[in-house]
Amino acid sequence: GDGVVTSGTASTPFGSAYEHDLNCQWALVPPAGAQGDLAIHFLSFDTEDSYDTLEVVQAASGDNYTLGIFSGSVLPTDLRITAGTAVYLVFRSDGSVARPGFKLSFQWACSCPCGSVCDASMTCQPCSSGSTCPTNTAADCYGHGTCSAGICHCDASPSLGYWDPTVQCMACATHYS
Image (cartoon, rainbow, N blue to C red):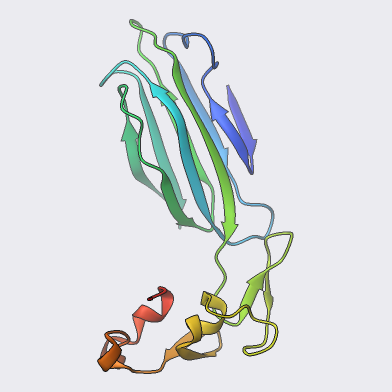
């Protein structure tokens, strides 16, 4: 079966073994109009190693990119995916061994450019640096730059070990302590 959800959990029929010859797909879509990152947390994982798989696929510009294929009984590490479009979970099982399957939780979180913050409907709204933008966040360039048209222009500080203006201050996108 297929389903479309924006947050919550996804799983094979949890509590019993999944069926043979499955090809199930879940579309994890951000709320309408939202831009965001998708966090996936694996709660349990037990499939027939190498034969029954969970594939995580991101759709972007008409192409699909496989972000991971998981199989076996080792719990996968959590995933954080920068995405503006749907991420698909595709579970396939073969015709032989059936195991308990998987259960995971997922949640979309805003990913706004500097000079904006995420509102309750996960939409980026403008904020003003020094007043309505939360401090020490991407919204205010982590306090080490100036935001102009959604781009951080960093204060160079080689003595502190961050922000090299010769590489377009890419480090402004990351928090440094």
